[in-house]
Amino acid sequence: MSSSRSDGLYRPGTSPIHRLPAHVKVVAALGFVIAVVSTPGRAWWAFAAYAGALVLVTAMAALAPRFVARGLVIELPFVVFALLLPLLAGGEQVEVLGLSLSRSGLADAATLLAKATLGIWTSMLLAGTTRPQELVAGLQRLRLPRLMVEILSFMVRYLDVVADDLRRMRIARDSRAFSARGPRHWGVLASTAGALFVRSYERGERVHLAMLSRGYAGRLVLHGDRPGSRREWATAAVLLAFGIAVAITARVAT
Image 1: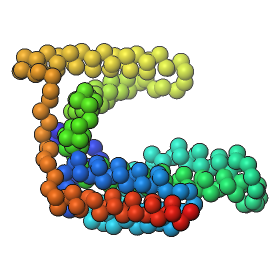
Image 2: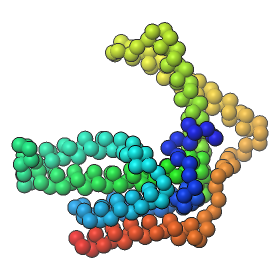
Image 3: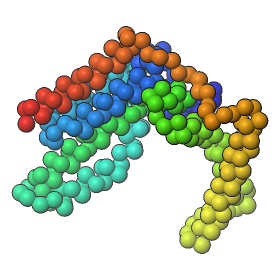
Image 4: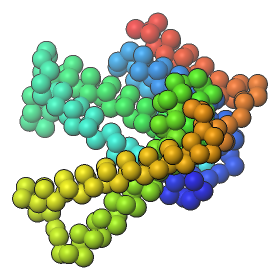
């Protein structure tokens, strides 16, 4: 768990955002995203205010803009759907570059993209300032179901191991001049996926037996967790309170 690969999107740092406990950041991020989603559509000033707050948090965390931009690739499905909305929605039409587009569809598409971008941006800030194992421990402190937390913990621990297995399988295929070029090669890819599943399942059984032999009694001890101080909760509450205030103001204004 100490390797940089295991840390995933985490970027080491000593900023005030990095030092906040994981469960404190999860509560702040989740509350902020809920505020963004609950904001009425077309409240553009509110979305601009949210973006300004995230710019400030990004600067405090000393995260590079390209790091956040790279995470926005996840938004591509939303972009495709948003591009279709003006073509499919009804109502008043407007000419844009020779195309007849729905005015309400354009507004809905812009609202969708604004909310998706802000939500993904918030998630990238959380991932970039929190180690995966600390995040799992924080979810445990927030009283998520024990089984779910343990599944997430094992996923974080062994994701690199499974990825290495898959990489070795790919190298073995490449050494035999294999190249997937069409449906006739899907059988080989399916066999690879099946072998990877069986190998991972067998490893899981061995790990479970090893845990039982070391006194596992149904509860994992997760490290990297600590309670948040009043000052840390107050720091995180600033972003949460700002999001709630903006969302309420936007609703009242509309």
